[in-house]
Length: 422
Image 1 (cartoon, rainbow, N blue to C red):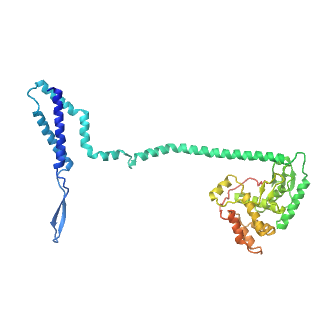
Image 2 (cartoon, rainbow, N blue to C red):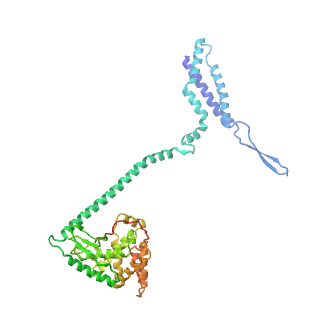
Image 3 (tube, rainbow, N blue to C red):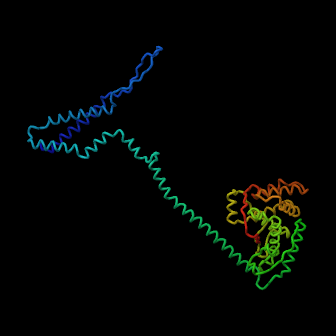
């Protein structure tokens, strides 16, 4: 028998003997748990007393039995080998090969795995956790990834928001360009409108406002000038209404600007808030249309009209956040207020509606705090005017328009000069 064969037989014999020893030891070891012994107590009752078995655990006893069997197997393997037929050098070589096998890393790794196999699940579980607080590795990785992605996501959101703003600005610019184009085409060149004709329209409107109950200030100057461009506005410091030549032929333009001025002079503080501004513009539209009995505004300047008071515009169904967003983006609320006021005119009649709205706007004891606040003033004015009580109908009207249920308070300061355009 060669030395390699001898070493192989020797190792296989030892391994087999060791395996048999482990299996046999695990089977013959006593697996009984703690022993319960009944002992009499002082009062005569039997009390169970639990005593622990002092013997080694089953797994430890099995390994000890396996080691003993391993030694026995090694002894048998040595006896079964033809030791006598080997020279001293061959015996030394065989013993060296045997020892080299036992100190090799695969064998050592196998021994380590066998020794720690009971603790492997717990070790794997511990490895899957990191940190002093036991943070799961997967969660830690996910958190790290999310942290790295957060700036990217934020940057993408900023880009999208910027694109939306640019798109809105582009659309607004296109609308302004279209309005300028229509402005230029709306009035034939070389047909100037004399200031006297514009003043005559304004005088008629002032007489109408006096009948409604307004206390009018002095009559403003009127200028039809290219300096106004395609626009009309009331210059408060100069007490002058300036109108572009293209807008002068339409009487609604001068009426609207004067109504806006008259309303502003009554409640100047309310024009420092967005809600006050939107109500003032809605009233200016209303009195412009009510004076002529035509809900279509500036139809001569820009057919068929710039705005129509006979509409169904409403805020109903929109949340307070949606409405605030519309206002913040410069949304025009005059359609909603003007439509609601025109509906009130249909409900109460022209004279009563004109008077009720004036009374509600004339209450200057405190600022208007919200849309519903002004609606409640309208309801109170109508209830106290000596006419049939229609508070429920008025309330339903403004609820339908979404103006009574919306309590968005927006008292942000506006320092710009009041400019009301048709």
